[in-house]
Image (cartoon, rainbow, N blue to C red; front, side):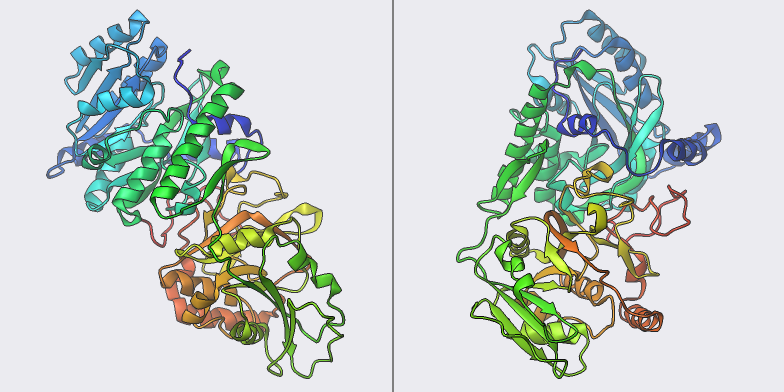
Length: 586
């Protein structure tokens, strides 16, 4: 058993029992039909690689410590079996006391000149050993590999083609799965194209992470003292140094992460050490990149998972909650919990309805409540625009009738997120009957043009979702207008809501993203949605869709924040044979 601490992501995966995403049976079928290249396909890769002009040398860097002999041999053999021949393997033995380690490494180096090894004089743990292995590297790019994992035979060929297709990229990362002691593949992670917010909650990059060697040298390699989350720290620092435009996702399973070999080392003590290292790396990343005062704490019921509490600007921005009603309200007492449970001040609640649709009941003396008769015969978008123009707050929170707080401090989370200068819009977790999650962000599929996140299934409030994505904030294409927070200045800069009977929220989010701002969803703001938010009839929906298609064209069919190998529409296979086109693949 290796004393190396397992990675934080691996520990969290062990603690997550419920499975999401493709079923094991569907994944096995997909592997057999679409992800097991035969001899002819591999031979074709070899020919293509040998014909490449100026092929990139890829250095596979591996730290080793007391790895069980069969696993170490299998890991090395998986690299030697690569269809892409232009690689070198750089292995650092971290002073393993087990004599078989040096024997296996010496045998491997003698049998293949591309394998180079070094033995450290003292044990320095995984970061120090990785850096020692990195010193041996001569390749243009470096692929990080753990000492008991496996690369599929096509992995480096796929990476090399991506390097040549996108020479400006400094960091590539692929999808991954797990492999058990019998060599059976399972539990794939089909990753989104790029998701900077999700990277703040989990190590989205590993595995397989492939870095430009010059970037690693510039960063000083992996940092010691963060063992257990050293690869997450490296990914955070690399993205910050290179810029997100130089990061690219490869939608292919290029790494098999071995499970079961170190089961007895997964203790609560190891989990806390790894989680603490991850929180430290994340806090330093946030501070160094402008998120001053952000606090990184464990999630209460999932202590291995981080939660970021972003600092509120000073002075605290006023939030204007805007609720468009079909007619004048008969009473306002039932709406006051929106303010009372918000956990944020200053705040105001603006109620607006079409002029001539009834007379409001007396509003009392609460100065935070404002009643605003709007334009006559106006739709919801026009009403919200009119109220936004009169709002006193720096942050607008657009709400739909029937939305009620499901958790205290729902508003403070939205305001803190919306106040971040790079964020355009923020959406909340919306719950329906049975505490089932009704909204967790939209995806674009070109037909609806947006639908709730497709892997929701029958998810309930505290479910973790696919690889934790219902418990972590993440970038999304759009968020529901049933609860949408946006800075007033940004809202006005993009022209507010389009006069559509539905999907004006999608259009607003697309406009914000086109302006260079990001749209995120957070699970830490939760509200009940007592009624469906889209009540437009079929004719109105068709008209709105035609308008959106004329405005946005192919953008409505390019989903950038959901795996291109997972289905967006009913009736599609649970895993696609080939990745669909994506928006912003970098």
